[in-house]
Image (cartoon, rainbow, N blue to C red):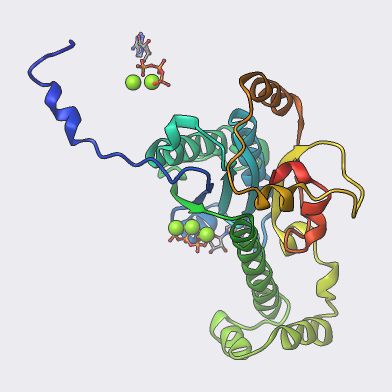
Amino acid sequence: MANSKFEYVRNFEQPDNLLPNTWIVVRIDGRGFTKFANKYAFEKPNDRRALDLMNAAARQVVTELPDITIAYGVSDEYSFVFHKSCSLFERRASKLVSTIVSTFTAYYIHYWSTYFTETPLSPPLPSFDGRAVCYPSVQNLRDYMSWRQVDCHINNLYNTTFWALIQQGGMDALEAEKMLKGTYAADKNEILFSKFGINYNNEPEMNKKGSVIFRDYELVEPGTHNAAAEAENQAEPVQPSKSQADNERKRRAKARIVVEHFDIIKDEFWDRRPWLLS
Ligand code: ATP
Ligand code: ATP
Ligand code: MG
Ligand code: MG
Ligand code: MG
Ligand code: MG
Ligand code: MG
């Protein structure tokens, strides 16, 4: 097949290698999940089964792609962070995004019946879109993660109040929307508490904070070491030797992969886990 007269068509392929030495975030999002959630009667505002299923699929993605440092998920979306030194697929965006999207989707469908035991999937089957974005500094990456978690908080407080007004307050969607228009967080907390006796602080952590997936090594005591800041201060990217890289790969392959619902905005999470950003 080599040197056939057809081979010139390869020249039409465009390079799409992502900027070196930057953190690559691939974010996937369920396509048309508002409709999908209705079809399978997701409990509103947070169907526990659906969130557990998202987490199970994402955990498998992190397991199969050791270049992923950390992942964060909420609702029908998940962000996967590739380490800035990642060289998988020569950092080609289309390869990275399509591999994540198809691996995630395959596991979402594979695990469906584990979480939705009574309702089998039927076409149209769930699908996800994806995009890749490069973040040049640890600060940019952390701001990205914070952005998603703040979004989770804002949406969840709104949705919790909105659905309480409907499910317990007997309002229809329009009335609830009108009532919440122009309200601040404090107003929503107040509505929840005074009308329904709900203390928002006692809502499940997964709903309030989303889910974070990472490889778990030994925690570092607060204030002893700040590898992330050190790494950020280095002008040149550190190229680990081949055996170092091999060892690191083996260590990653062996580490326990955990799903937690931590605050990833504050420094503490990152300070205690310096391996995530170094
Ligand atoms: P698009 O294809 O543009 O992403 P979409 O309908 O998926 O459209 P999103 O903004 O991604 O729009 O919103 C996700 C939808 O899925 C929301 O309506 C949300 O309420 C619903 N959803 C996702 N996960 C859950 C869950 N665990 N429980 C209840 N509803 C959920
Ligand atoms: P990569 O991840 O780089 O794509 P790969 O192993 O998938 O690696 P390909 O160049 O895509 O490499 O080759 C596909 C492989 O799958 C070949 O080894 C091919 O023989 C095998 N294969 C695919 N379809 C069939 C099939 N229907 N019957 C037998 N073998 C198949
Ligand atoms: Mg979308
Ligand atoms: Mg969606
Ligand atoms: Mg979404
Ligand atoms: Mg092939
Ligand atoms: Mg192949």
